[in-house]
Length: 373
Image 1 (cartoon, rainbow, N blue to C red):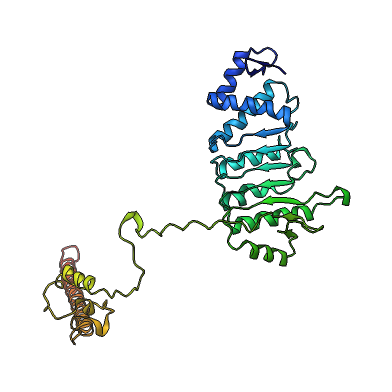
Image 2: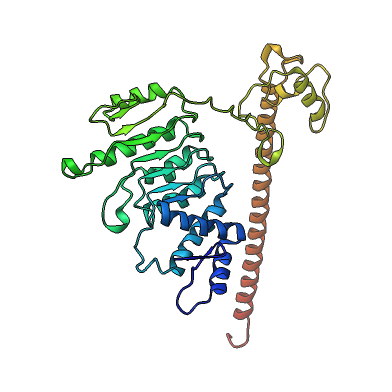
């Protein structure tokens, strides 16, 4: 494969060079990413290193760059078969502001076309516990199942990210159990897996390591790990303080005033007075300035601390009055119902008497008719 004017001859049979360049630029979306893809491919063929470090690649840029590399592999005729891995032993995407989404693109590549890589560098990115749990956990396991064979990473660099205690614990345990459960002869067992988690935000890292050891996780933080160690953590005690959490939002649903819990006692005198003034007098009447309307309605929880009067004649008397009124209403309804029924009965009896008289007249008329004589 040769270079012409600093560009590679990435042309398939029956395709012109301009068409290949246009296709690569369309896939990458910009000249910068297409040129970067060509440079990375040349370096990978020469040094077996896929280097995209310090390129300010966001999540979408990482995806387009991966698509560009696959396009070059097809144009050069390298992918003679779909499951042929790329010739890289190191994958370096450090120093890029990618998050969980971009990390997932790199992990997927490392488990498929980059499965021959023994070291992956994702230092100084923007990876947190979610990225560690959802994406990196797939990378620390068996990474070569794509081709039906087994292969493991030897080293994973995650220095300078935002991984906390939870994400670090999951990564260490996944890596340990993947290697312990791998059935192979002793001379074919995977080597010690090195995870560089320094300069993250892991709280009390040495306590975490001791806790994992108590759970029979063969992890070591010393410079010279033991022979049966499965996971080595260099400079694990070198951690940053976690950034302060943002204050909780006090706004309620819809951005309004926060909703208060049911049954909550309100001891603010000014708010109590304002509610008393805003509520107004009771329906159909008024009350003096010394009476507590909340107490009369059964909603005052201030007790003896209330500035208004809880005198007799409040809720209890109002309840009795309501009960008395309700009883009177029931009696009135019953009386009106009885009266309606009695009027109906009288109408029915009067109608029956009229019918009886008519029948009597008809019978007498038939008995006096000439035919009967």
